[in-house]
Amino acid sequence: MQIRTMLLLVVVLAIVATACGDGGGGAATTTSSVAPTTAPVTDTTLAPETTTSTPPPPTTRGPRPDPGPVADGPTLEGQYTAIAPGTYRTERLGWPLSFSITGEWWVQPNEPGRVVITHPDSIGPGDRDIVFFRPTFLADPHNPMAALDTQDGWELTDIEGWLDGLAPSISIRNRSTSTIGSYDATVFDVTLPDNFPCGPEACVFFAHNARIAFIDFFPGNDFRVYWIDGGEREPLAIWIGSGAVADWFATAETVLDTVALGDPGPHPLDPDAPWEGGVPADVPAGYARFPAGDGIGFTLDQERFVFQNNGLVAVTLAVSGVVTFFFPISDGSGDPVATVDEVEEAIRTSSAEVAVGEPEPDLPFDARVLDYRAPGFEGELLLKWDDTPDRGAAMDRLARIWILDTPRGPLVVTAQTEGDEAEFEVVVALARQLLPTLELVDLP
Image (tube, rainbow, N blue to C red; front, top):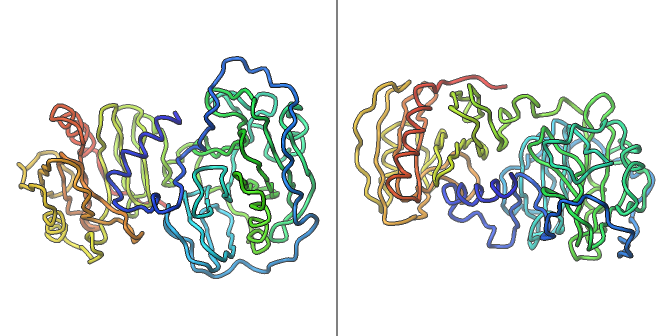
């Protein structure tokens, strides 16, 4: 699952971004945490105790000064992009939170249940990052290397039992209590020996939210976790990876000193339909709803991985290519688009060949069909579905585009691929299956 997710991200980013900034210093993380290069083994016998480096002692233990109420804003927006120094607020976790940063930082995944900020030179999960994570399950401490889909979950209220149940070769250090934003927190550091035998999907699973995203521990990094009690609600985990930087914990602690928390609310992901929260997920066959605009719904012919990014919905296939859905708000230069004509005009700014296609039956709304042909991936930003800088729709080499005239404005559906004509026909066939079932819905 993890490899497929990583490859999919490459495919979708080819569609959605021409200058995400990852090459400029920020490290993009995938839906799942990235496992280390340690080869998976089938023998799950834990390695013996090994001498490892001890993380630096925490700079703060015991209660912190209360930072006061959650800041009014601005709201932390965007993903995989640099963020300026200042104070930010987020509601993505279902638990209002604000924090302040100085210097250079990037925001990475910023989605329901998970918000990640990193040093600009971070090369991936565990390297100079701070992950704010709202879990729904703790992994089994007696078998934390088992596959994610076999992890039935440990009680979220029993973090102490989870720590007590871990094998001795999983080094837990500096275990103590503290506070974050006036809430009680259990704090501990984790180090794995270099020869730790990792499982097929991860070395040591820690927690996940509806099996959509997870946090884990692996060799080569020191980790610190703050586990914040949510009372009758799900807790909040703050997972910090130091990378090879000895003083990163001290840097992270200065940010945590500024964290203010409001009252914990419900978890933002429905465990029975987490994709309705806008996160990438395996979606079973049948009718499903997604938060594009105020909401869309359609029927999938089989279980498929659906990538989402703040209003973009991308249904994947086994062949190269995707079917995407989004409500455009502007053209590639940021000028608003509000009509079918304006959307077509934005697409025709491409240097590719764009022709009007044949009308198609069984569409839920009046539509204009365009056929797009280019010698290769042009990388031209044609349309944007949100205001994240340098991010939007850039068509693959072959695409069919339906511009649907809905009561909520133009809805763009694309079937596109970098593959050959045979693969293109497979992608178009899937779009034609989905389109007759498409409807507008209202998601909370």
